[in-house]
Structure formats: structure tokens, C-alpha cells
Length: 312
Image 1: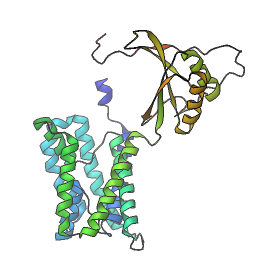
Image 2: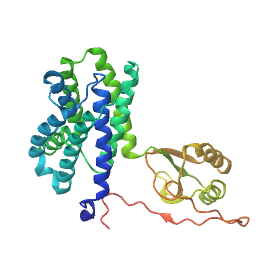
Image 3: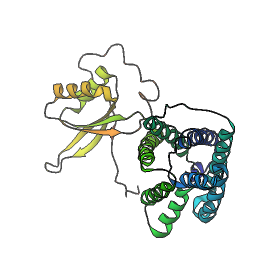
Image 4: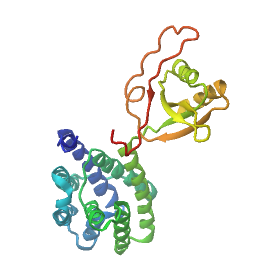
């Protein structure tokens, strides 16, 4: 399993190239012209550019290389290669986009500029993160702090972004900083969606005395499969089967009606499922049988959930 995780894939480099290209384009064509700040190392490069005129393509390399040297021991071979490539290709894109003249007329609407900056940068960064890459910068330092001092990465990354944004007030006013905050919020949401998937399904656990009937109805009426979990009541100590179903958000109302019709006393828990892979979601559902005999039920194999510390 470890060898598989450490495998270096050409597809990853392709996604890093596309993602950093999107991020670099937004930085050059939206952030810079509209005086929007940025967090992390990218934000530092914008500060340096505003104060000295130094090209962000070069400062991206100069600021990141020492950080990678500091953290190379904990990155591992695969992460080190991916990080170095991410830094290099991002610097290339920032350099290239500055050579290609492009005017994006937003009619001086800073709100739209903030939204677009967050959307483009978030989609690009999320694509890089989704395939296991990074563009170096503050996340390398965050890993070092987490390993050596036990500081969670989320806290150190947030602190770094806040410090850089505050430093950015040397060249942007408070109004532009507020639009930068808008861009940062959109960025965080888009990164989450891109990393974890935009299709948020619903996982439904149904504790009922009629599991067979509900599972069969789900299959015949909704064309969805179901699984059984072996559970036990903490008070009665009676074993029972709990039905687990994953449905699309727009199917939730139909499922609720189905459960209520069969067992009004059923205890139902609805969970948000960030990403769903597999049959019925990322490829076609199985076809329903043309005829289902009256009184017939669909067989489902019971599933037992083992505790996390079970070594068997």
C-alpha cells in the first residue's frame, strides 16, 4: 500500500500544470491589476512587487527554495519532487502570463474582482491539492511546525495568512483589504469543493423493525441499493439490521415518504456525504429487473463494522 501511495504519476504533473496555470493567471490578471492582496508566500511576492517592482515570478522561486530546504527532511521523496515541480511551474506561469497582454475589464467592480480572484485561485489550488501536490510556501513551514512543535497545520497556515495580509496594508488600503477577505473566503470554499467533490450526496441510516421491506422499496421505487449494518440496542440489547442508503439530495424527499409509509416508528439519521464514488453516482446504476414478483424481496449482504483498534 505504501508503494502505491508513493508512486509518481504523469497525470499528477499534468494536473499540477493546469492548476498552477489557473492560479498564476488569476494572480497576474486579477489580483495585481485590482490591488488585491494574497496570503502566504504569494502575498509576500505581491508586497515585494509593490515596494520594489521585483517580478513575482522570480520572488516566488527565491522565497520558496529556502523553505523547501528547511522542510525537505519531512517531505519524503514523492512530496519533495511534487513540491519542487509545483514551485517551478507556478513561477513559470506567473512569468508567462505577464508576457501575454490581457486586459480583463471588470468596470472597476471590486466585488466581482474579489469573487473571480477567489474562484480562479481556489479552483487552481484545489486541483493541485486534490492530486497530492503543493506549491511550497507556508504549507511546508506548517508541516515543520506540526512535526517539531505539535502545532496543527490549520492554525499555523491561518496565522501565516493573517500576518501576510496585515503586512499587505503597506500597499493596499482597508477597502481593498476587505475585498481581499471576500476573495479569501471564496478561495477556501472553492478549494474544499475541488478537493473533496462538489456532489454532496446524503447518507441515510434507518433503524427500523422492517429492514427488508424498506430495502426492497428503495430498490424497486428509487433504483438505489442498500446495505445492512448489524446493530444492537443499548437498552434492549436486541440485535437488529440497520439499513444504510446513499441518495442524491433531490431524492431525499422521496426516501422520507417511503420510510414513513412503511415504518412510521423508524429512527432515521441523515448525514452529509461530501463525495460519492461508485455505482449510481460516478457510473451508471444497475438496471432494475423488468418484473419483480409480488412479495419478493431484494437480498442484501449484512455488513459488520469492526472497531478501529480491531487487529483481526
